[in-house]
Image 1 (tube, each protein chain N blue to C red):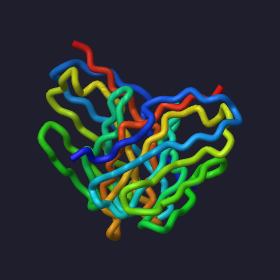
Image 2 (tube, helix red, strand yellow):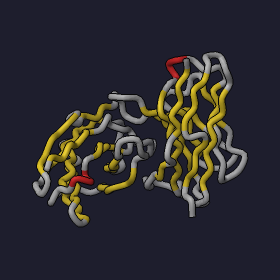
Image 3 (cartoon, chains in turn red, cyan):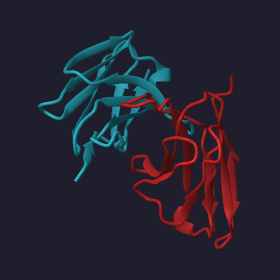
Length: 114
Length: 109
């Protein structure tokens, strides 16, 4: 069982380019999340999905979009990357059957926008 | 607003005990998580408290006081592998996790 996988592991991107970060989970979790983590700051929620077919905006959604076509996959797209989007991006999932539940994290994608 | 306050960094000695404090202010409250994050890795679950009191799990214990908006993580018999960041994260009324910046724990021999 892999849990949650993310790709790529790291990426250097020119400003203005489009980029999709991939996230796949095999735990049949309903809920999935995208966070960014910057030095000195807590994890900040970008977008989330409570179940396949639905998505919602988190704390810092501007410049990012997501889709949830099925239970397993939750890609994050940067339509036109800017240097302020340089960060480590974590995808997470949870059972999401109601109430507080534990989030499980993927290994992260380290993105540098130049 | 919502706010989480943890010390930025702490240092402790191998074999000792350390307590990492967290105070929080959230819109509503539905429990609090502690996660461990080693440098360059993903956060991993340590504990969850929803009722007041101490939850013990091996060398790690977590305490919660809802009336004070306060939690702590207690690590006993410290090992070098405990060097990591420890993240405090309460659930707000919308069941969104509000993450603190974390406490970097440095263990010295």
